[in-house]
Image 1 (spheres, one colour):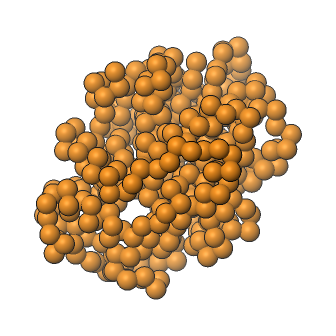
Image 2: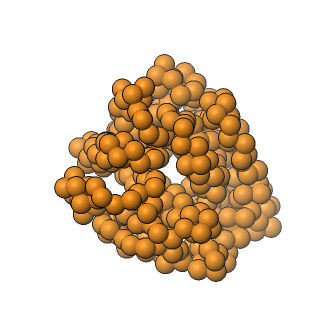
Image 3: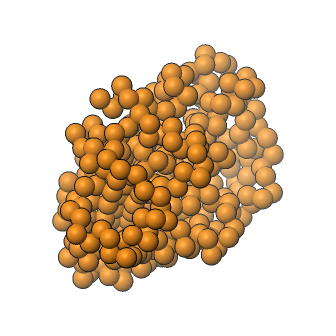
Length: 328
């Protein structure tokens, strides 16, 4: 059996799709469907069972999974809203839940991959290498992720089974509709153009020109490839960046979306930078891929223009969801 927490979410459902493509459907999806629109993420996929995240967490602590044969746990479930200010809620979801699964997996020598975040690098002024001297949290979301990474570091040398924390950079692609304001810029720009006939980006801020704030945008299909690389190499453990290693300005994404619609650049508009984001915003991210490449990852990353166009085609066809035909 394979367990995917957050399996009805963005990255989690893409992992389930990837598992289906590998011929695996003995999958337990763990999630919280209070946001009921997420059911659309899994209705086109094949899985063995579903559990609510609270019920699953309790079952793990009560030993109800102690005798199950589990190959691997992909732990993608978390509160991913970077604007959530309830620290107690954030730590319960992103640290304590992950910590409990970490001990469950390592006690039973189950491979364990969990979602960390590039937000652990803060402003990025110290770089984007998987080292403590590069890390700082600008919000409680980043703090919850960094706290788990540091917790792993305390145990790393003594681990007898695989644990990998993947620091996702700016992930985009199908199955993110439920994320609302936290969805990728590609998703938001596509829908904005459909609704208004134009695309909006922030004006200059923090020394960057209009639309020139820069991110390491990584296609969700490539995120799945990185997860599976580590699954296929159980001898590897630790914290690794999951980004392309190449930063692109938001203008690049906007141009790709406008190109998809055959629209001129005059349809790109710049709006004032929000006060609420000042001091909490990463104006630049770019993964240092050195560590990832050093352990043998050679799967590459999809060119951003190609990936955005492919994603826009999925949005055209199904509104951004996979269908059963996509996974057969």
